[in-house]
Length: 171
Image (tube, rainbow, N blue to C red; front, side, top):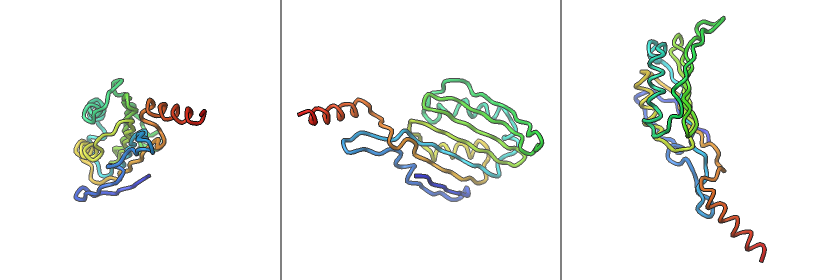
């Protein structure tokens, strides 16, 4: 399920994907790898987008704020835009045990993109609120995709069910 929400800061909308990230199969096996939040942010604070320390600090602390395990310090790169200087900005990534967090900034355009992909559920609305405050975001488009819908969370339970089914078939 893929949902798009375009929100002005004074509006609030709730998505079903925020509430139900995984599902349970016939025998109670929990399925679903996890949420993938993508955020396109407009009318951001240009100075914050152009400050590598702001981006580094956010990527360094965000995993802990959302209950994730940081595996490395953030890695930040600067791109000068080459023949399109208005496309210059920073790209940052932090690898987490649960997957990754990336942010790309475009200071001249007052725009940023953010991806948070995780095998662990997290409070998506609270995370978006935090990003909105951190970059003084004017409005945004939020998408939440449930990744790996057929991914079994509990392999022991799946193995027990398969073994049970095989033993019945052998009789």
